[in-house]
Image 1 (cartoon, rainbow, N blue to C red):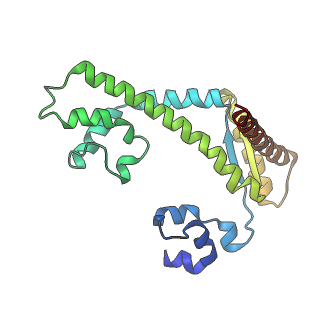
Image 2 (cartoon, one colour):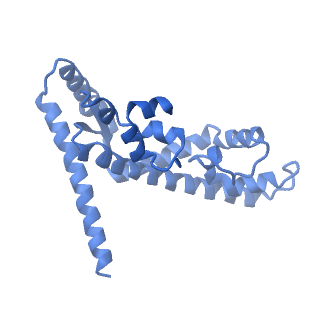
Image 3 (cartoon, rainbow, N blue to C red):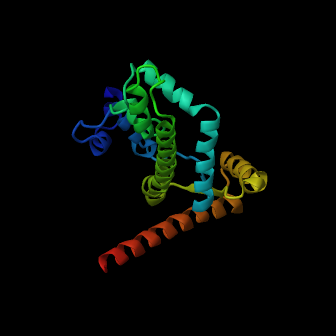
Length: 220
């Protein structure tokens, strides 16, 4: 923290004005462009349409469960001394805090034999739904972060549409390689400009939808 403060005291005051944020928050909040001036960089944004992204998130959670997520949750609870999941820090991170109901049931049992199976499964199902919902919400926030911390500040972001994963090489991999190679040579090919324009369109579209939503709420 002292090192970061020495690099840019004014910047630290912007992200850490009262000393209330953690060191992690400060480190994550450091903007390289503000610390060292304009640094050339090629930033890639893998974007997917909302319904497709939501489906991928749900599928990922289901796969995590199939691969033993609940066993990991049980082991983590045991390592943390049998906490019921209502503490701060790690226990409030996405992927763990959603299982509070399940952990309370499990933590309240002496050996697991007195837990009602249907009640435990209901808690697992509820936790699964919460994990999917909160992960989708977190994905939404990433768009806001990209818009506010990058695009609005004039950082060139290259959007690559990863909606159709079956076309990965053609729509993501090959364009990314071409853009990166051109960037290293100090060039900006059409594919790079198109990717930058795509990022701006997505951000502008999101802002327009946000304004319409606010307008509808004011007229209710």
